[in-house]
Amino acid sequence: MKKLLILMLLATITLSSCKWFNGLLNKEQPVDTLAIWEAKQDSINKLEMLKAKKIEEEMLAKQQAEQDSLKRLQENRFHVIIGSFKVPTNADGYQQSVTAMGFSNPRIVESKNGFRMVSVAAFDTYSKAFNEIRRINMDKEEPTELWIYEANF
Image (cartoon, rainbow, N blue to C red; front, top):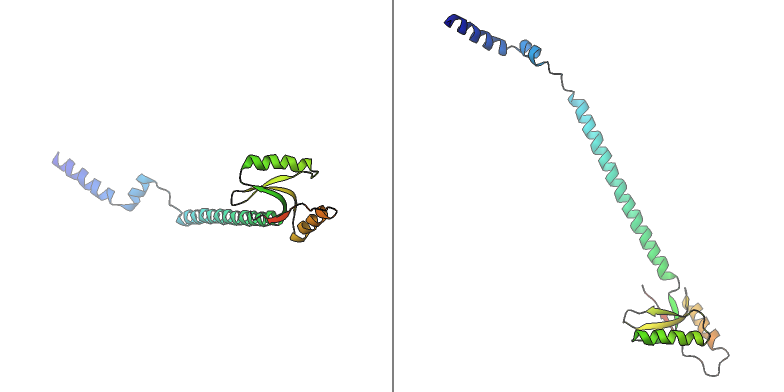
């Protein structure tokens, strides 16, 4: 029995250290590390391209928003004001009175200092707003008190 045990122990030690025998038992496929590395690099490149595209889209959206904001500032920023009020209900009531005076479509303009102003017209240039004041007061003995407010949004 000792001889059998020693023989088995010797066979186990000999066969377990043999590369050829381990290859037969494990039957592992060789790993293609180059293919794995290339796939990883491809994934990284795609991710970087997506990030760059997202950053570019955000920059374009920001530039468009800035351009829209500047355009909005330029459009009708000079208002011909006929009255200015701290109490909102007074401004609303005067807006109706201005409509009764014959001005079409007067609107309320909010100022940064909390006043609500009744505007009878709005223009994109100061000179156009000034010409409107002249036109309104042209045939009047007592001119209507009007002034120009430049809205800075």
